[in-house]
Amino acid sequence: DIQFMNAGGVLFGVKDYVPALESYIAKYNADCNFFHNLVSVDGEAKKATFKVAKPETDPEMVTVDFDMMHVCPPQVAPDFIRVSPLADAAGWVDVDQATLRHKSFDNVWSLGDVMNAPNAKTAAAARKQAPVVADNIVADIAGRSPVAAYDGYGSCPLTVERGKIVLAEFGYGGVLKPSFPSFLVDGTKPTRAAWFLKEKMLPPIYWQAMLKGKEWMAKPEKIQIAAE
Ligand SMILES: Cc1cc2nc3c(=O)[nH]c(=O)nc-3n(C[C@H](O)[C@H](O)[C@H](O)COP(=O)(O)OP(=O)(O)OC[C@H]3O[C@@H](n4cnc5c(N)ncnc54)[C@H](O)[C@@H]3O)c2cc1C
Image (cartoon, rainbow, N blue to C red; front, top):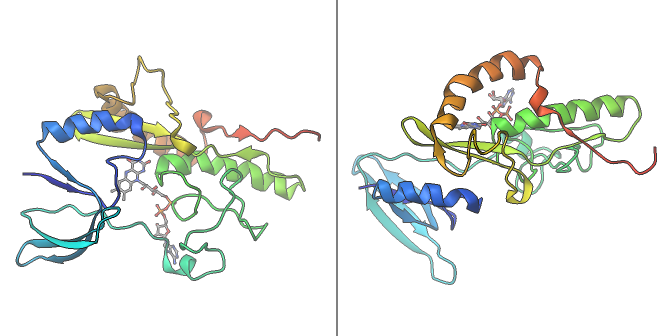
């Protein structure tokens, strides 16, 4: 008996991937419970308590029995960032979402999970952000304006069963950004190709290419400058 609890109101934020995920909810006979926010766990008694805050209804507390629980904590920036002048009200480094330059401190650039661009926080996103920040710092040192823009790309390989993955790839505004043509990997469907990509191809791409700065597929978009 699988219960899926989610503090938000949707299964996944980009609608194109929802049907594939819903088919697995049905396959595993799982119940989806939205607006459920975990507030306490009694490990000894194996009980979890949720504050349920559905729109236009009074919040209520619900306690559920469990045998095994998998919890994903809320995302937060490290304390030394949260308390620093670099952070926005929510605690993330406050950057321009295209250039990744700090909004108030011109000599600060930020990338990865710690900053507040509205992308999905993934290593795949940081991979695309690195060359944007690098190009823009080089331009800044040369006295020029930022030259590269980040498009919000992020990727969530959603493992749905052994051997199959739904490879969600999208940018700002939920725009789909597939890396491969759909006959190779259709990201909206569970595929063995996506599993193969994650298991066999991404590790060498990470170790041999990404970490060594050799990345032909992560070239940033150039900012169009009217007159220069
Ligand atoms: C379970 C799980 C599965 C994931 N799966 C995927 C996936 O399949 N694909 C994908 O693309 N992404 C995935 N991600 C997301 C990915 O791991 C992150 O987006 C990525 O690691 C962010 O990189 P980062 O360098 O910005 O931050 P981090 O990797 O968090 O690096 C920050 C570093 O700063 C260090 N640090 C913190 N405070 C200090 C301090 N005071 N002084 C010095 N160092 C400090 C930390 O120890 C850490 O090493 C997953 C994340 C989780 C948790």
